[in-house]
Length: 156
Image 1 (cartoon, rainbow, N blue to C red):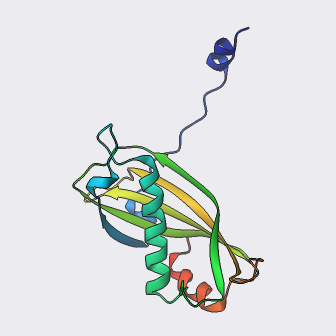
Image 2 (tube, one colour):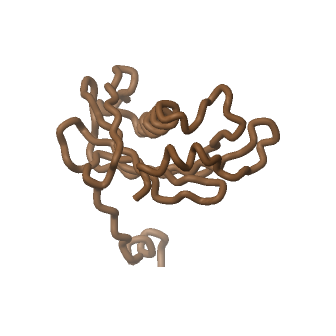
């Protein structure tokens, strides 16, 4: 059996369905930029991760969950994933939806949906996990109480 025959015979994995707006409690509008585009005429895949990072950082800084310049406990990304459903282009406004699906002792799993303005289903969605560490030692630390309070409205 050839490698191609093996791949063709393998069971198909079911692709996740795009999330809807109703499943995200927080949104941030983000304008696409000309520099976000790739040679194929759509927003490049790596740019979505910048959108993910932007909506999380905006929320944490706006709610005093984390001060990136002064907080002793800082979040480091240890895992990330993104699924793409529909291309985005320039110029458009996208809306990044944010929710928290796991608050652990030292970590948080953020899930993000990227929506074309006015559309109900995500063009892309994914997650990343922050492990909170001491700024100086880089060793894991318990989530600070003020962070748990800031994230509570996002928990689903």
